[in-house]
Length: 479
Image (cartoon, rainbow, N blue to C red; front, side):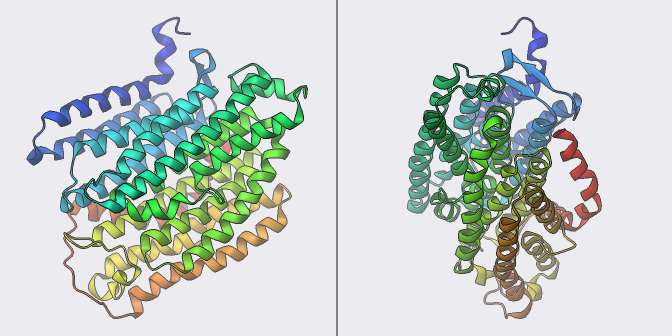
């Protein structure tokens, strides 16, 4: 498959990321605890240079196939990867403070996170069933270990075991679906699979089972209902620095995975898998929003919120159109920026021996720290989809794509559930501005965290100016 070194040029960002991750893994063994900040610096620098290498040959309309079709580099993949790098870099800034105050500042966090990012990049660019599964497992296995980072915490260990067991089951089902697809078509290449499925020569019953297993695997990685059981427990039980990472970048990778498997490999069966995704979207919207209302823990509330937002992403994917996939990608990008800000605020208000992960911990925040209360207001309002913040436009574009695809009734349900979901976001805002503070914990967040958090919050408002440009970029990538 490799005829010359030029065949590896499309993989240059991933090869650089792999090399630097191995260097950081080895360097972490020799860097003393007092100089552990060097690992953070190297990890962030790795993401920056990987993004530069991705941008160097970026062309939204160009599609390059490498390794005999196993690796595809195109505009969709590059855009998703760039925002994976950006969200991970933001996570590293927030996580550094949290890891320090909770005595978890180890190099393994950064090594595992970068290996997971590498898996996401492979998953996003997979043009072959084997490549997709390789990227998926590299991403998932790294995150399993990250959830158990706090080895002294029984809750974190329990969450990691739940995630590992359920994730292994989902991966097995996905792999079984892939094997059935290979048996029916005789190929692992997605383009070849789509061509052979278009002929309609395969047995309908076995093909239906293959599609079901593949959709189940995708649903689990999204955290969609009814495969959401792990989300609330893992989000609450994992260290907040890990939950922050888990909530953002993997959702972008899941969109890439859904695109490769469904839109490229199973495109002739769009009527079959779109109905399955429609059911998952409907249940995710209902269960996610209704479940979040009853929560008192903010991390658990954001977990159910994630499930509801996954419902909106699936609305775009299930349309089976380029505009629908562009809307889903735009939604995943904006959601990653919103959720990093929400968890970043939890970390910013935390201190040694105190985690600001209860909704009551935000009572009277405006009286103590009005600037950060305003930032949290922007993030919560954007998650709720209130205009003129970017979260409103992301919901609008997805609903428009669903309506254009003929799913009017589902779009109506989504609007109703969005109104229901606004309650628990507004409850946080109400506590910040109208309730009396229950404690006076010191605010010790470092300067870099404050700057990134301010940019993260203000981005919810600033991005509305560039909504047209960002959506046009997403649409151009899908043409």
